[in-house]
Length: 111
Image (cartoon, rainbow, N blue to C red):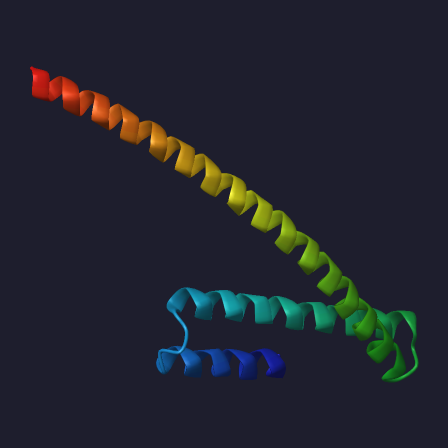
């Protein structure tokens, strides 16, 4: 919780200095909270699985963080592909609408 607080405070400082936008502040804060939550949950599970003080938490924290990074990278690629497909659809629809507009415009000028 302390890590998340300091991270969000740093993002707030960047936002106040106009170094990042509101959307970047919100996104960075959400990502930071997710990463801290994964780390805390991994440490808790590690301590339960390996009941040696600190050792279980450290080992499981590293494993959990590593798995989270792999999952995050894969989701990022899926999201990029989804956004690219969506952008392509918007461009195609925009082209269609421009043609329709030209058609109606010419028809209106003839009338």
